[in-house]
Image 1 (cartoon, rainbow, N blue to C red):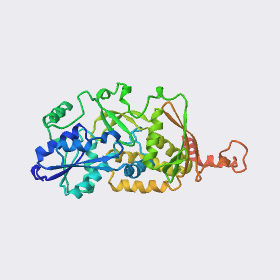
Image 2 (cartoon, rainbow, N blue to C red):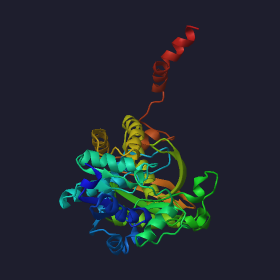
Image 3 (cartoon, rainbow, N blue to C red):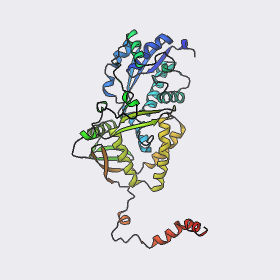
Image 4 (cartoon, rainbow, N blue to C red):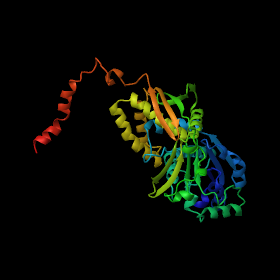
Length: 400
């Protein structure tokens, strides 16, 4: 499909500087109708005034869909249940947001009769891959337009100049130095002083959490209840997923929980330095992992740990809509059938410490584990076990 043959394009739109200038750029360079689509994943005040901005930028319409429940249920929870953490720290807040946005972008393109989709991801980052692999998987016939790989804009100032030339309403300034991505799960920060990984993040950069030093001097206790691996209540109060994550974000942020400073390996080959705030997610990952420790047997837990590394990679690398992810999910779902119980945590000065766990399916047997007198375990049985377990070591030693 040649550039001039595009009639209608659906743009993944945030209302930020980049996607705002993409609207007139698409009209000028492709001569097509532009429909803006914004997925509400919990970015809060960032949604204010979005329709007016999109229309003034030249879009024919703005479509906003509230996807917060679907986001948590179908993307966040499976990743958390898998125990997936990218490079030991990152809870994948941006990574699994892109496939849900791209999925609905494709659906809207089909509903609106569009022949193309567009995104504002740069040619240096991971998001371009996450968007485009989703397009490939769900509708490979759609033309993909990635302006950052085509246009002459190379800097923030270039984009501001372009916006001014075409009368695009933007609130960005050259002084806004951080690139951020926010949703219900996290808030990421990149750019500015963070481009030097030796620099300590400035405290006024953080928006979801206080510094651990400024957190309350008194710890706060939480009890998280799970049913088959799904968090359902906080301190005895049953909550829907959206309300539950919002509650944990607030209490976790108040205690400085969930800050991560990470130099990560991007899919495209370069390293990048980012800072993430994931207060509620950190609490949930910690609690879920602890419940697994008493419910799952050793071999199942080890198998989950092996899968977790690959699962994190495929989410980070944009391969959400793939058979291997579906296969991993089937295994993980089978491990969650007995994941019902409660975990008690103590939040204090940036830490979420587990101080209690219980489940009707617990495999922990106090009669076996006790250091006191017991009538269940015969300690003499250990002698024969050790002889068999260490037989290979003994044979090796005898042959030297």
